[in-house]
Each structure stands twice: as C-alpha cells, then as structure tokens.
Image (cartoon, rainbow, N blue to C red; front, side, top):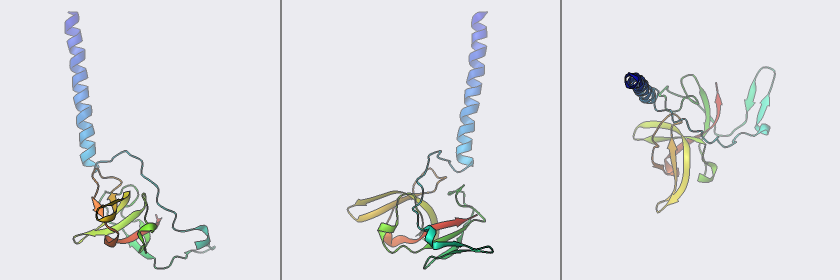
Length: 156
C-alpha cells in the first residue's frame, strides 16, 4: 500500500515537471526567446552640456542627428518598440562604437537595429557582433562599413 502512495506522488511530480517544462519552452518561443541575460549599457553620446531644458521645450544639440521610429518586431523589447522615438547619428569611426551601443545596419534590404554584444578583430579586420536584446541568436559579424547609424537617445 505504501508503494502505491509513493507511485501516486511520483506520478503527480512527473506531470507537474512535464507541464513546467512545456510552459518554459512555450514561453521561449512565444515571447521571442527572452534570454534573461543583462545587457551592456550604451555609450554616453550626449553630455549634459549638449542638453538645454527650457520651460516649454528641451533642446539637444547634436550635429547630424536624425529621428527614427521602430517597428514592433519584438527583437529589442523592452528597449525598442512601436511608438518609441530614437535619435541617431552616423558614426565617423569604429572607435565611436562600443559594446552596449545600439546600431542600425542592413541585411539585404532589411534594416536591422540591434545591440553590439562583441567588438573584435579577425583576419579581415575589425568586426562587431550584434544581437537583439530579446533574441537567442546573434547576427554574426558586421563590419564598420555596413553600419548606418548609432542610436544616441530614446524618447518614450
């Protein structure tokens, strides 16, 4: 009789464990594979001396800045999503881009906006590896010449 009770408990634990694992796998696929890993913070591109706050407006003085909006692809949630406005600049040199910065580049016709997770050198020179904050896989090596813009500010 005691063995029957133990089997019941093991059966309930097995069912619970399978349900938990299925839930974890479903969550990972449904929500775009949240990595759960902390990301590096972006570089400080805009100093206090470049920001002036008036009673009726805020002025950010940055040369070559452009406003950008983002599609809700999910790869950069919760940082970027629909309704977020970004301010970006074209980088002048690879030294201006660091791990943690968010850059835009093209893969074919598609514009990708992801965070730099690695900066290194190989036989072909300097490279950057990017990945969406909410993605499991990285985008591979990106060369400086492929980078269009660096995000310097977000306005929610």
